Image (tube, rainbow, N blue to C red; front, side, top):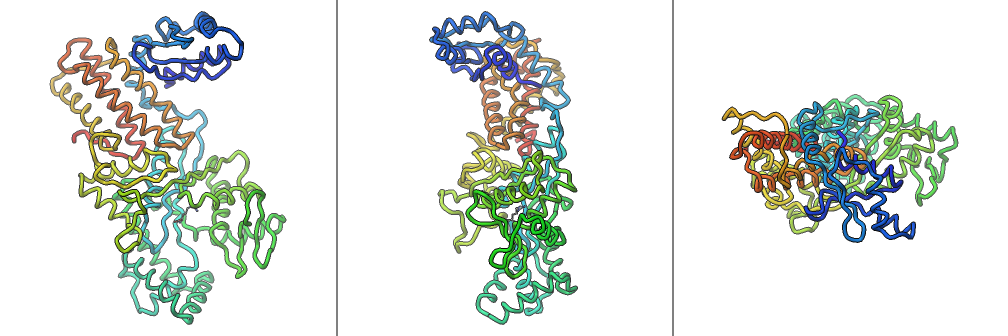
Length: 544
Ligand code: ARG
């Protein structure tokens, strides 16, 4: 459904040829929206602004949407939506099988690279953010009718496996007895060992060669480490209620066979060149080249990502690829995209976007770490939030805190603030949803029916209807700009509009058409809150 402001905007834009910069009215007596377009045009044309405004009002045909337009102050144009239009829009929303979401005109195949933790390490807060944000994109784009192909680019390959396998063999450890924290402890022991023991370091390097050559015992232990880790990741995913499944795992090792192919291709076509023993690509605008093959003949993170892009474009048929990875990897992705464009792996019509994000800080706004100075494991974060609230509310608190400020910003993990049912929090939205559900439940129990939104005499109910009409637009905007805080802000405003409505307009205590209409408005709001929360990955409880 097109929102009412978008309809008005389009007509005003057609008439004036410029962006009308439609804004919500600052006071109810000014109507619902205001545009300063006349003031801007007047400046260009050197005419009195009120005269330009009068011209526009004269020629703009919006009788089917608005009350007669008003010119205010120096030349603002005020728009007040007709109440029958607002009512029809809310009713249409209630009846819309898509719940107010505009199906994409051109459905795409969208690869979303998210979560992507590393084997034999517990997920850290960066992976938490990636998982929450990526999952929100997955939900939003799927809801619009795009085909989303999640790719969990698990770090399951690399030199660290040499030392891990050697350490297991030396300790005579049965890897089957390990869990993920156990594997991480092993990682730390192996790392210490590597630093202090030259001979162990040499053996670890040889072990990497064996791993790459497909040595059976080495591969078996490596696979066990992956299985243990994935089991651990899945426990976290289950706790987080995300859409990711094992089918979405495409770890770095998936691309092993493609790495020499990519290197040869880039070298043959003169895109990569040998420099100081390494095969590299120089890209304009970057002060360091992309390393395709290092001096020892090994392939690294960038080459793997190039191979992954080829796969995503050629085999998965991606029209758009979204990488949800922390801001420190911005340079990596810019460079990989540049090389991939140069090589034609990433055709011009395929969009590649890196969505970086900031850090999660401690409640004190400082670096978040344990007393020992190590990174805080994810389960500790969940435990902290669950100490304050039930699991589904704690999870809502965490996800909302993660999504509601601009992604690039760092945010403080303040569990006791995040779980509050007032203020700009996830639980506040859940509470708003539960409260409106309670009214609908009561009405149902009393056998009161609601059909459509028909009476909208009170400003608070008009305002609520107006807010509801904006849902589809905001979802479109999140899909385009990948800024989930827009949806959070919208839902927060909607919940605010709902409580203003309760205050001004009795629902069950009113009668007849007014009651039926207010109930229908409640039902439409419930529907939008539930859908909006779903898109954020947040549970919408019926009772709280
Ligand atoms: N495993 C990496 C990390 O933990 C993230 C991988 C992101 N995805 C990618 N295609 N590089 O930092």
